[in-house]
Length: 270
Image (cartoon, rainbow, N blue to C red; front, top):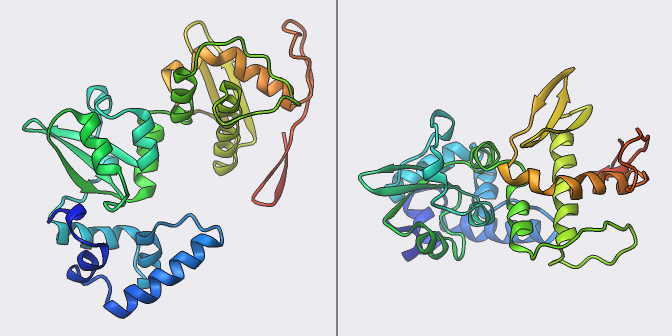
């Protein structure tokens, strides 16, 4: 069964995942939740209402679609496989190229009903593609592992015209500015540290890379980062200095600074 050619309702009912009444009720509740700020997809919301895990729900859906359920953790995904799909498309649609078999690329997705995804994948893959299901959590882990934290933001930076970046706290930022992408990337770094309950974030410039490490439970862990990160080292360090009230022109003497941020209503002092 091919997901794009049948309605969500038809597929979920044929998979015996929802009744007609449940579909109507849960769809309305999901829309209300999204309007209230929820980031759940329809399938994630339905699985919770049904009282099963996302994995259980998707395995049953995979059976109905006659798609495989993909265990991304057990795979070692080669660079030539992941390069078939751009970082931008992978993060935009929450998909992960998993492996190639008999010349056909398998893409792991958590929501086969995402608008525009199938066309975007077919355009980029330049060859036959088939799909499998995996949970959004496992796909997110794989994206960070293989593409790197914030990789999609660095893609935006690389698409911009090269400019001399002067970070200023009072400069107006627009969505397309390179500076806006630097800010977005730095926010992602801080968010990841918060999620991992890190006590320290280490930015370590090396000759051919910029390493970023988080201290968790007293141990430093290197965060997976895109290889092109080194190109934006100066901009990122300048952003840290601006956020913490340091002098961005001073490059030799040590400086002290602090950053106050609010994450999920919690005040964080950095």
